[in-house]
Image (cartoon, rainbow, N blue to C red; front, top):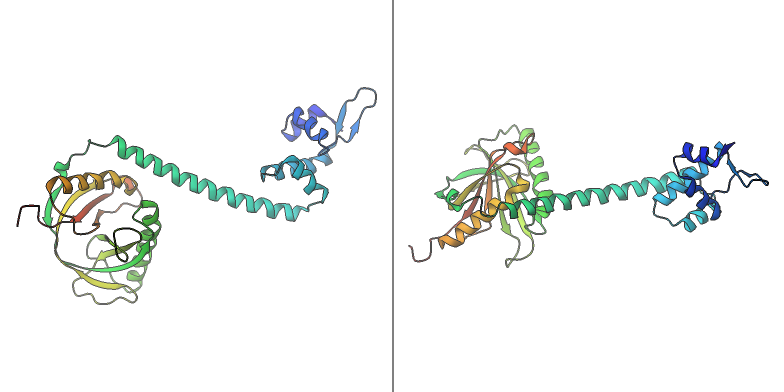
Length: 279
């Protein structure tokens, strides 16, 4: 038998907690000295204490914990409850981490306002290229909607090209279009890679020719989770120059570095029409 202090130390809880659990009838001591009132606990009681703590971690109130224990929940059922709670907490942690990354990106965008000048924007005519591409629909143009769509597209695209023995002949390219009518709502995401001009169909992969087009372009250095700031520089240039954007634009992955995204180099494009007052 152990004194309440010894048992608390072994169980890694406080004496105050044990007294509280005793008062609620959750974990009465194994024995109480009638003369001194000193509580004593046995090692066998660690199992019940473990269940109390586990159910408390599941979010149950102590009164609910007592009701569950009074029903003599088995170890297998308790394990199932804990595994479910673990999955819920892991999902919550992942969601919180994603929100934290989004906040950090937005903070970086605000901090970098005005530090990257529109003088880095160039107007150029792209070359016509043949690309192998897959597409899917994202709920919106927001990064948290586009990212989970475009990444699996590229994984599938490269897998199918490799299985067909087709080697890329140039960089990866992506472009975006409104899905349906109007400027709001879903976006069709195209994930492509430049292939040899003689390349024909590749299984389920669509092979298409992208025509030459005049674009406003700017190079983004670093990971794509910080690309918003560079897109905004490009948007300011388009507006200030009086050009009319002819679409949602796209990206050319000049140096894709999945092992170290900080070394990535991406060119952002917005197709443009003539500036106001110009032919």
